[in-house]
Length: 173
Image (cartoon, rainbow, N blue to C red; front, side):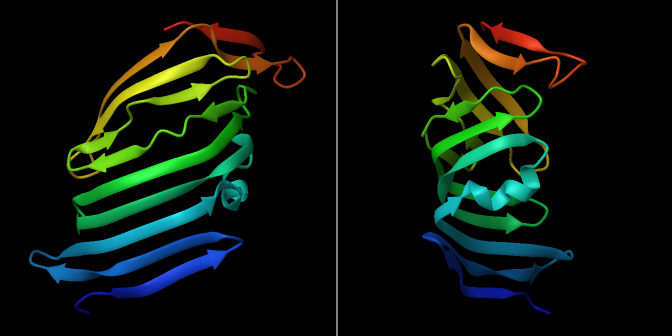
């Protein structure tokens, strides 16, 4: 076939809304071109409970995103913005509940800007994340990320939870 067209595809439930429009097209050299718009007005993280079971003990909050996905399947181009709201999670391995800042994540022609992100631990201490994931095709990704923290909690487990490693660990970066 010449391609696939997605027209006014939408998922709505419980105040959540995702809309996708766009198409694929056959290009020379057996490549597939992409031209999609993805609008997520609200997507609750509890939709992913089954996927994160065993990795995250709790996951809450919601996200919105407005993205354009283009290029080819060999060299994706993602542009737009994603915003996470009221986000919290507890990794099973560390048993520390984190809250993520509501800083927007920008997708640009050179990658993903992560400037201004922060994770807050239960004591109100933050891990500040600034930097960029640089990519032209989403196959090779370079990182340039700076982390800053002062007594930020990275582990809080007991011997009963994990007999191999346990205790409280804090880092200063």
